[in-house]
Length: 380
Image 1 (cartoon, one colour):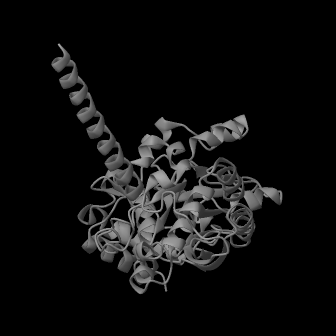
Image 2 (cartoon, helix red, strand yellow):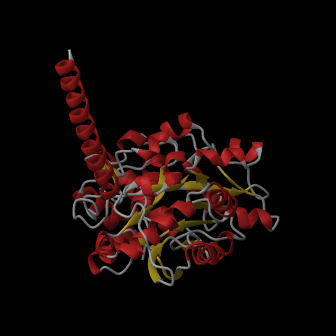
């Protein structure tokens, strides 16, 4: 019996040693997997983050709040260099040149066949455990196929909206269709974007009668009627806008294509502009924050970049962006601090709404080139 007890104690000891070893290995793997998880940055460190963003993102007031937070909490001095993007091709160019650490590509860019950011290994897989607010994002956006590859997340969904049709409700009734831009009454009374040719192709295709499920099919889209309508869209516009639409560009017009960013400023000035709901649908977008691959060799910059992403998808910051830019937050928790009308109008936390969105597609290289050329041929 005494021998049996010794054997049992020996087995228990062996199992205990195995358990300790397993815990040590697990803890080591956990710490390593997080890349910058628990990273011990030295107080007094100075970090420069270069950003390539849409105008309106990373505004000065947010940069100042973040800089103060990093200085007070970690004694880390953060400086920014901000460049504004006009066209999607700039993201690939920037990453190849290692010109920026943080970028804001729309959902269709990371896996683009023409600008293959993920395939070219130009983006750093994001360690979401280092970004606690990531778990607050709408579930379908956390793992959307647009932004993930082989289980890795390559961009954090930030804001959502559409390339929509907006109108001045004091001058015209709500247009029910994209066809409103081709009505004689609209000639010389609308603005259109010049920087993203494919979305102008999409809305022209919709107005020509192409179903939204077929807008990426070049053979279906490219008809004489479509070509005539695309030329009319370009030639009859009163103004064009680059990057993002602004209140100054839209002022005095009746309609415009829009990301929705100008509406808050227009409404604040007493000009009652609204977003229409065309029967054909509107191409939706999600803008993201992505990390340049070269950050893997710059742990201080990576640590601060992750802190920045966590900051911009936090509840309060997301609410601020929503109110300033008129775009829907991807953080579902914003519903707890927004008004009831804001929660309804911006679909905050509305999983079904986000699941049902018609995001504009990733095009083949041939189709992407064709659509770009079609627009540039008519837009001089």
